[in-house]
Amino acid sequence: MRIKFWGVRGSIPCPGPRTQKYGGNGACLELRFGPENRIVIIDAGTGIRELGTHLMQHDLPQGPIDADIFLSHTHWDHIMGFPYFTPIYVPGTKLRVYGPITFEDDTLEDVVGGQMKYRYFPVNVGELASDIEYLRLREDPRIDLGGGLILLTKLLNHPITALGYRFEYQGKSFCTCYDTEPFRNLFITDPEHPDYDEGMALEGEEVAGEQNQAIESFFSGADLLVHDSQYTAEEYENGKIGWGHTSIEHAIEAANRAGVKKLALFHHDPDRTDEQIDRLAEIYCESGRYGKTEVFFAREGQEIVL
Amino acid sequence: MDLDRDKQRRQIEKFIKRMPSLSTTVGKVLEVCSRTDASPNELNKVISLDPVLTGQVLKLINSAYYSLLNKITSLTRAITMLGMNTVKNMALSTAIIKTMSGAKKSKALPTSRFWQHSIGVGVSAKLLAIACDMPISQREEMFIAGLLHDLGKVPFGDEYIEVLDLAKKEQRSLIEVEREMMGIDHQEVGMMIAEKWKLNTVISSCIGDHHDATEVMEESRRQVAFVSLANTYINILDIGYAGDPFPNADDVENLLDIVGLSWQDYGAIGEDVEKEIEKAQIFLQI
Image (cartoon, rainbow over all chains, first blue to last red; front, side):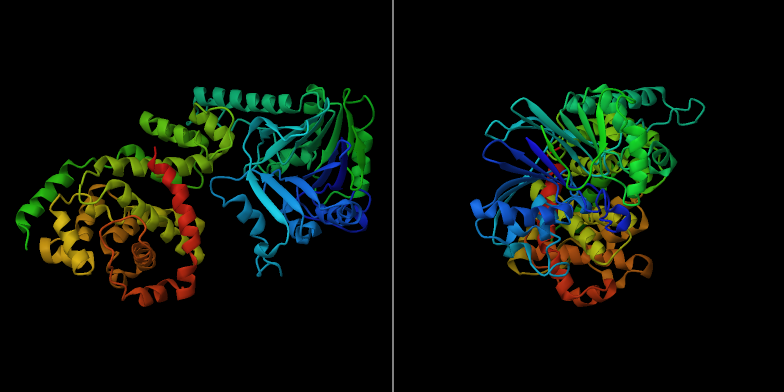
């Protein structure tokens, strides 16, 4: 299993001299499996544009492109690169786009294709030359993708339905856990408050704890975990609670508890400069300081073989 | 053929007298849901007061629409996992449909098709409001107003079949035939129910004036116009059935002026209407 980061940034692309090292493109990961070099793509942030160019140069000459694209969720920064993914314009390309939708939303095809309307983009989604199938995903303990590749999905905590993915292939496991923040007790916990209810306070606490535990079980023992870490704990506590993103500190602690082997900190805040990330890396990625998990900040262009 | 008008009116009044009041729970859910500062504790408490409603909300949350592997068995859990807004919307729609379904007994309008019409008007009114950039906080009210606009047809007895037949045979608007044959129309009856249920001015006006929207007082004219346009739209599209396949569409031009939409905007909601109805149908299966 090979993994390559084509985009590591959260919220909005942020190119420029201050983000050159870690990269300014939005979320996109390329996974390759086995001798047939099977292609799985996770998320269609702006990083997918260069991945598309790469596929055109290196894969298309071997035959039509056939790939599975898994969207963690449909927020803009995770789908905005899709219209610039060149293979969608090539006859013969076969894509299966998987992802969750919420009750209020349209179908996956409408959500992803909705950005390809003339008012936003010169090509309409109906004019694409490739063959694209859209498949809605739910929380699922086991999906057999064929060829020995198994997928598990987990509901995360984000303002819209977002899924974490766990791929298992020939004894190796790769996991994503973004965009998400720890579940927390939403109910009033102050016994002096007039609306305090002991039952709600206790159950809220219990459910939040149980869901956080379920997420850790989901990525337990992963060879590589790519986890949301948009904020520092200080930033998170000061005005970012409820925004759907995790602190670096929490991601590291959770990965350690779950026995994760390698942790890629991911979905960097667009305001986070290379210099700042390097400084944070000195604190958090130093070997052994925060447990056994090997921790690093994901960088655009970085490749990992499992 | 004229029906016995006095007898008809007496029957309607008797029916409304016996009709269930809008429960305190629904009233409170409406109140909590309309406040942006309501706490999770308040929402939880107000739904929990009604065990049946609680069960229905949980059933809905556990339906295929949510991507959940394990069943959610408590409101506290639902709010923690899915957030306040989701649970609020579920509770509101469920509460209203439940009350209405309890009241619907007429043979003249088959229940499921009547509901399809009502939901169709609800979602269209909301979509038109969205097209006009109505503030988000007021959009849900347009759905409710559309959903309830034909409430006044519920108490009519089996004699109403003759009214429906005549409107169809002579291709006339239903409300005209109601007035002619019964001396009372569904707007008037609807207002009687709205008063009993203490519905707010906007929703009451949508129930009582949706066929006279151009004459409504200014404060709710726009909202009534949305419901009126939605009603015409759904009748012409033949979605569901509420007995009015030949509505009077003369006012459409004026109504579009009131809300500030073009004919093109009006037609453009079509595709979304069908999708929204499909989603809303799930409430009917509660």
